[in-house]
Length: 441
Ligand SMILES: [Zn+2]
Image (cartoon, rainbow, N blue to C red; front, side, top):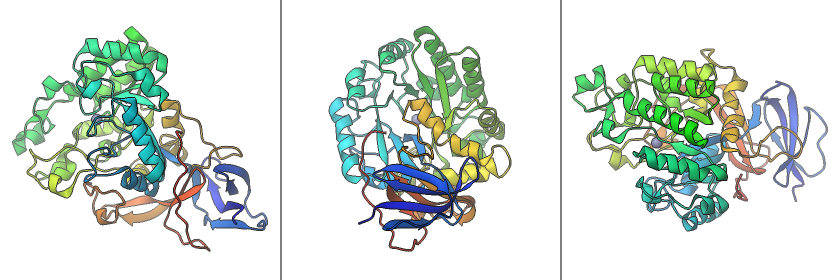
């Protein structure tokens, strides 16, 4: 019988101190200076000097269940999450059917209990069928475990409906996660509207389609006091609007995703559907504005917008292919490669944007490297380089624009609730990947 697992010789993500960490019963039992004697029955895990941090949290993931299991399942999506260093993901309700009733929230949680490799935090729809008309039963949805509400993928066009959504959700304390895009202004756009779309002859989506809705919802947060979380922000005007909201002390937070600080609309090349996403990739000035907004603290946290599709779907002509890319298995490395290595962020700050920061945004319990804290941990080597091979993803989705890229930063192991959910090192014993005893947060 294993009394406890002891992670030996890890580097503390904030202090840099060399530590041993014991985990048992799903919790951190103790944290000590590295090199103490092994206890009888301890299961040692040699960390080899890698960095130990709280497990990453992704507030924006499409797990595609119920109803779209050819794209992804809760089992495969959370297995990909564990491989990426994540111990919790919030999943979007734009499935088939849409998660807009307490029964479907309970279904997602039950499915997670039997098949997930990380904690699953369901986001329920804000309006029935994500039609932007009638509100969902948000109080009942929150009672059974919804952590936020969103019509992600189907922006709420009516300002009056959005006002009522914010007012009705307010007593639940849950944020409204806003996919900001004016549907009329977007029209049938396929990519960012600019010089590249003109050259390719593709219909464009102007940056203003995003910023007018961001500005609207900032004003509605001011009107109602409801909590607005701005999803996957992609352009300079949106960051300016978020800055203004913060200056006014409004209950508005925002996230952005690795592709917006890594790529531009030029990445579409000759109609590459792996670079087709929504919001679309923007020009270099917006990419630079994204990095500035992360570095100066305007952005509250990072998220992937992990959106798996089948190979057949993405193999269609550009205009027929769906929007979205996978992100869970490349997020940490893109953060280290694109933000830490060039000096925009320190490693602790970059990790904070994936750990403490998203937990704060959704009001989830904190995880710290101290006794009594949940043993949700990631062990990572920030200097290890690897080449992205989509065929090796745990996700069913292979739709990434980063295939063949060499990135820095590799996940060595992940524990969720004390269970080893991913490892790429061979510990002394046989690695036992276990089912995670799942509960909310
Ligand atoms: Zn979205």
